Amino acid sequence: MKRGKYMVNMAHRNSTHLLTLINDLLDFSEIDAGNIKIKPKSINIRDEISNVTESLDHAAKEKGLELNAYVDPKIDTHIMLDPARLYQILANLVNNAIKYTPKGSVTIKVSLIDNDNQALIRFEVIDTGIGIPKDNHEKIFEKFYQVDASSTREFGGAGLGLTICSHLVSAMSGNIDMESSDGKGSRFWFDLPYVIADED
Image (cartoon, rainbow, N blue to C red; front, side, top):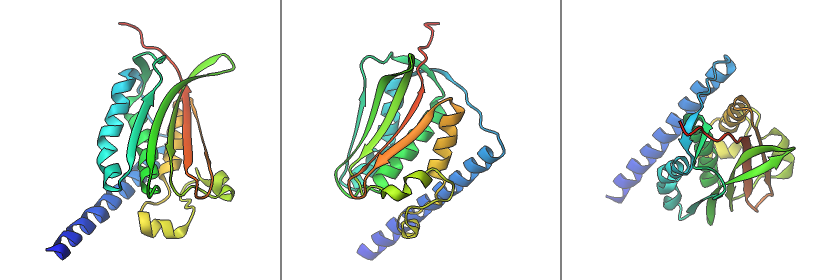
């Protein structure tokens, strides 16, 4: 019975990794061909963040992790963003955080910042995971890049997720960056223009 359950779980993990790989390759082929389409519309930002946490909460709980979210109350309820692309970026970053965090927590934080008198909305994904060595920081958003080749075997993926995030953020007129210390967790963030949706 135990062996049967083990085999089913292993098959599920392998199929999930394969699906992620296929989706990443399809997304990257679209990006490479210049076919990124951004469709901003009025969204409820708190609902969108809830969608991310609800869909990934099970993966976090399987590892005994806390998945938290905080949205600055100063942010308007309805803003203009592409919900599908926002979900794609956040889900990718949160999935990575869960993947590389053996214990502790993953937190999504959304806040308002001011950059040269331009209002931006900042999305942060903060984890207490294994971290990334400093000499890997500059290459982390490059395609097919892996911090450690063994991570491909252990966690799956082709090193495209962060590249896709970087291109999507750029297509949405934003910037993405990170900071991390080996063994001390990571913080990824991206800033997008803060545009309040018209009441209509």
